[in-house]
Amino acid sequence: MSQVVAVAPALPPYRYPQQEITDALAGVVLPDGADRRLLDRVHGSAGVTHRNLALPLDAYATLKGFGAANDAFIEVGTELGGRAVKEALADAGLRPDEIDLMVTTSVTGIAAPSLDARLIPVLGLRSDIRRVPMFGLGCTAGAAGLARVADLLRGDPDGVAVLLSVELCSLTVQRDDTSVANLVASGLFGDGAAAVVMVGDRRAAALGLPGPAIVGSASRVYPGTERALGWDIVDTGFRIVLSADIPSIVESHLGGDVTEFLAGHGLTVGDVDEWVVHPGGPKVLDAAQTALGLPDAALRRTRASLSAVGNLSSSSVLHQLADLVGDGAPPAGTTAVVLAMGPGFATEAVLLRW
Image (cartoon, rainbow, N blue to C red; front, side, top):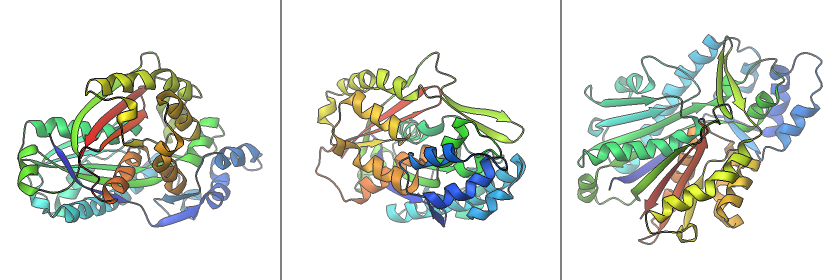
């Protein structure tokens, strides 16, 4: 089994209280003179106290057009992603030229050459590094990325791989768009990145580093839910699709799917020691907790992450994983489930064991 040997989160330096963001974005998402009571209510109920943003807060009022936003994504994303990879490699005690594979994921910007290619000269990566850029998995991509890297390392037991997630959600907020979906997105999503260093099983044995093994993974897409979550690509960029039905979809399906997944590994929900769950918002977390029958303490890490930095799309579960790994090596046999929901509508689950 492949092993996670380091996880490094990264946040942009511009950090603001939620109320300050609400006041500034009111002039961006609302037309002049519009009633802002719904915006205040939506932002106030998001479960978020602070967020880090890709740009200074006053820059969003003058950021116009998809091209300008995407240029900012490439510039900030390359810097932030590079910082995360450097820190993860340093924690693992590995050099950039030892990386054999890099999987990158984002759903908040487009780059060709992709971010991984742009990082080759910045980080000193080998020119023959294998690259797998992923787009479209949305919030599930942190968990899905762990699973896909583990799949690839199964065929390269001596390999070293990096999963890099870069999500600059603030750059997708639409101007003068009073739809509930846009108001929710403007109050819920933050910006961040994370890098995970993983190694194949033979390399893991040789290095002897702490960190959990990836035991297994599961993917599920629910037919007929394509319009529950995602993007409409419009002239002004990524316009969010966000259905009020998401909590009911989660509550209806998640419990059975996770129970079935764990049973395949001889476990029950009650056997799992740690839960790393995507913070899709308070109602989604309540639905997940109900579906799985979890006590409040099980989602303490997730709710704390939502409050501290907001929903970071695919980076969210990796930030939580960094906290879990950074807490020190738990006893042998400790299990964790990384669980994320996203466009499709879909879920991804990954089982870890120390």
